[in-house]
Length: 440
Ligand code: UGA
Image (cartoon, rainbow, N blue to C red; front, side, top):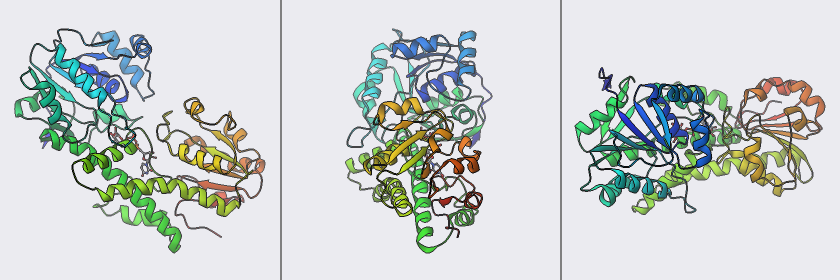
């Protein structure tokens, strides 16, 4: 069903949590003329937000934030107003990983409890936080039975860095609700967005979110495995990817071989689904294999470097790219974290550089790793360069002048298959990609 609502009813909304999802949600809903209050308990963040400054990097967020504050449609608060007089409350707090891989739900439980305590009149509670299937049913039983709160699952599919664009151009709106009237009210939130609507029950909506991320990580690990196979059989991943991606049943997206996925969502959600399935008595073996393949992908990069450089102890290596993907300073579960520690253990002399994520990485790394101020300082004198994040700055770099400042054997491990292989080989680099046929 493709469903564009004509009804532009303005609603009063409270959004609990001003992280990537919460702040995007609050700003976009205010931009659509709803009246939104966003609760943020962290005092430093709250202060920034009240001044119209975003604590997160997200394209376009500062503009929406300032507009929202100026129009009075958006405000921030340190806690829930009591009594709470809104049409819809949204929980957007984080669900990080517990040490055993399960999703930590303490922020969700706390927000749910607070909302129950503050609510005296009918309201819909829509949860956007990523919570394992069955969580909504438990929350209803624990907190919301015989209260004026009607619970809905309304997962998000926003990509970091493109979240605002994704908000206005979603591939679908998923609403898990117990009755149609409640679902219709949630649909009205998005009155100005043209997208197919999937109406389902709460647990199925929760499952859609995890299944989407599980499918995407499986696709990434699958293409990484095919890239490894290409190396074994002397095929070329670039042609193979094109050849399979043209089949509409497969599609070209998320078939980019590399050092594996990172970020604040994919790794944690894959582990949480695996853990939650096991808890319910189901061993999700395909997902386990996907997670394992992602870890192995980082380790294989070290083997490739050893093949090219011999003993790594004392070798000078420049590692380029710390952010988990380009155009963000987010380093959560970024591939470099695994790679750098493996190289460090081998006794490599490391210099690292990233256009935006250096300060976030500093507290996590040994102090004898050199943080280079720019690309050339990182690569000068290096025996090898390892490209971990495909920033445009690296793709468009003057590799000839970089090579002139490097030392033999001029290895470049292109961990994202992002660089012009033939050009680099022409310049005298020893190019190693991920599943790209070695040119001689
Ligand atoms: C991801 C999903 O794409 C969103 O739909 C989802 O809403 C979000 O997680 C979430 O659960 O909140 P995001 O974490 O911003 O969004 O990152 P992506 O742009 O999807 O990339 C994730 C990782 O996969 C990156 O490390 C990227 O380098 C890697 N990747 C992606 C590959 O290695 N190969 C590919 O072909 C695509």
